[in-house]
Image 1 (cartoon, rainbow, N blue to C red):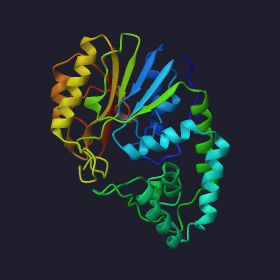
Image 2: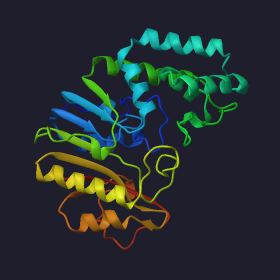
Image 3: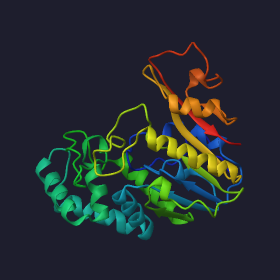
Image 4: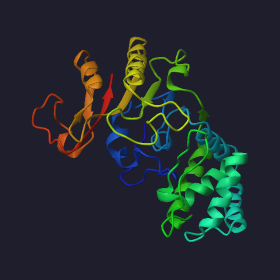
Length: 292
């Protein structure tokens, strides 16, 4: 497998909570060297999937409107996407100061759910973040004097679309436990970056009209991973063991009963054992768990 030099990874144009762009230099080299089918079970911002080298890439997420946006990116050329965005910006006179125009487009999107309108909204939303309420209405507030379709975002989108155009990549919308993994074999690879049980965010509180995340969901995912292992399918799990003094006991118990490999993704603990008693309670300890 070809590994990108440091700094050459593609960055998602979406500012997705929990995105793995900054951790790519630590995560990608830990992946198998040859992958037939790569499955990203919780694709989110797609920072991992867009940088993986595999014969086929399947990106899954249960957020319907996110997958619709990715499919729109995949099914149209770059000039169409950019022209659409620029036309909408002009039509609604969008800027980092025009909140009225932003709210008008947001109202239209919540009626039509036109996929590319979601991206235009993200460009001018607070911190470029994606959020829906329990009625599936996009409700991220306006990014006043902060957010716009700036040159950096334009570059990220262009790089992302260019990679999509040359990749054998597909997007699907399922809950993780409904995704069919039965056809995978020993040369395939599943990556999981689920909502983190011991952190909080709008993506895992279960109050936004989509499936939340709790101990039941966590244990169900771990069972899915065990099943993959029994089928000789390689997997990697991103997760957090400690966060601000809170421990993920479900994950710890699971790891203590298995011989999976634990790779620490924070510089202070990269070579540590997770049983260490000297962990700083103020830090978040993120790991990559692999069965190979």
